[in-house]
Structure formats: structure tokens, C-alpha cells
Amino acid sequence: MSTAMTFGQKQFIPTPPDKGSFPLDHEGICKKTMVRYMKCLINNNSNNSLCRDEAKEYLACRMENNLMAKEDWNNLGFQENKEER
Image: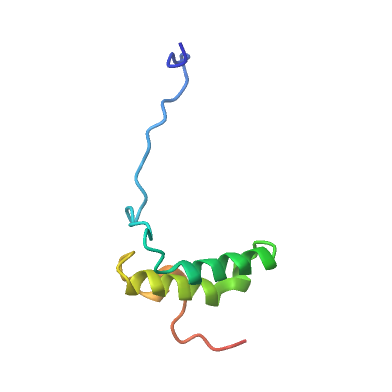
């Protein structure tokens, strides 16, 4: 049987995410911003630091449409009054 465990093997105990679960965007409310972010990642070899504006726009869309809890931008890794480099 595949459910048998070997002695000394640790049992996997799943833990929930820190922020809990969030609803999926079944109606596609934020799909345009999500696609824009994904295209940015593809165009920049998955370097997400080059896609921060798109990521912030996507998260803002999710917060505005109650698809995630409203969070302070600092908690999400963004500084609100960040000066341009």
C-alpha cells in the first residue's frame, strides 16, 4: 500500500497560509491587470523587481473589489511615498 510509512519518516502536517485564503477572481474583474503583470514577468525573465508597478496595480484592484483584505502598502513590500530613482 502507498499509505504505509517508513520508521523515522516525518509525517507532513500542512499549515494554512499566514494571511489565510482569499477568493478567486471568478468574474475576471482584475484579469486585465493580472495579464499585464504576467506579460511583464515574461518580458523581464521573471524579474519581479522590474514589474513592481504592475504588481501594485493588480493588488490594488484585488483590494478595491474585495478579493483580498485591504492591507497597508508597507505590509505588502511597497513604500507609499517612494521617490523615483
